[in-house]
Image 1: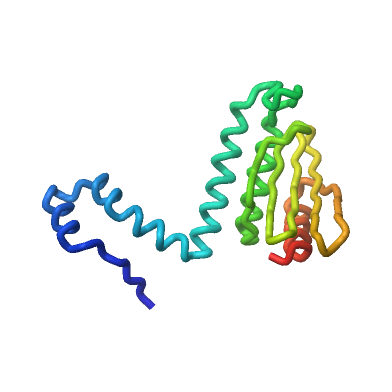
Image 2: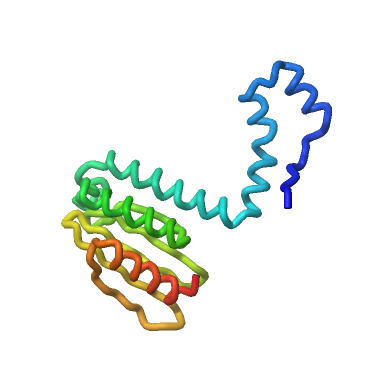
Length: 165
């Protein structure tokens, strides 16, 4: 089924194209329409969560020692590379992260929230990885995992079941 984009008032389209279709102006004119369309698409919303996680991951590279004013170590290259791999596998498995932050433990924390349930994957600077799920309905569950693709995909599946995503 073809998708039909809503059109702004015809006078606005005429104005935009009358000035030789300036792409910046066209983008500005259609940005609110596109935002409305994206809000209704689970696919594009999920893509935005992954884009945000990757942007935040890049930002962690700029953190310095004591970034949290409690002596926290910034995420190192090991934890950032593992986090990037995990985000990619989460995207392949369609489990979008809710948030990605530097961890006060030294590393990266990826959070997934669904209603009153949540999960975290913590990637430490040492290369170790831990995961945990929390819910009002079940006891918390925490486990360590290896950094290979199979173990990460198993953890993603376990998180999906535990938080019912």
